[in-house]
Length: 101
Image (cartoon, rainbow, N blue to C red; front, side, top):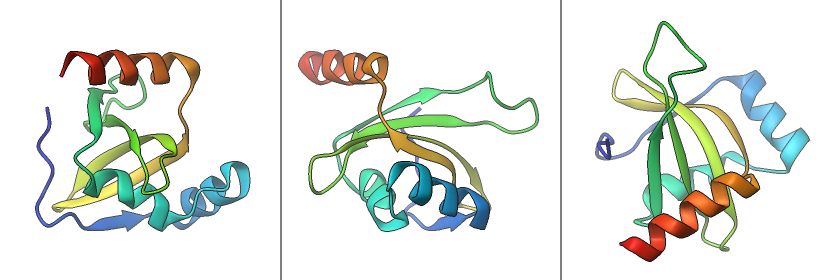
């Protein structure tokens, strides 16, 4: 489902924000660029939570970096749970989707 609240507002857990920066060198502002672009795909992520609906977004930043993020929507805000560089499998999915659209 490609439905995101407009305008997109973000909410971060302090621990997850720090982990994304320390482990992957991803600043919150860079992660948020993916949601504001038209160049992303959304996939369901039912494996990681039984209590809330989570989505996986794969998309590019303003500098062309391909990121994957798990998020949920709470109170019309995008709550980013994890942000990291896309895996080989995610890159392939992204590239195949881009070719077909």
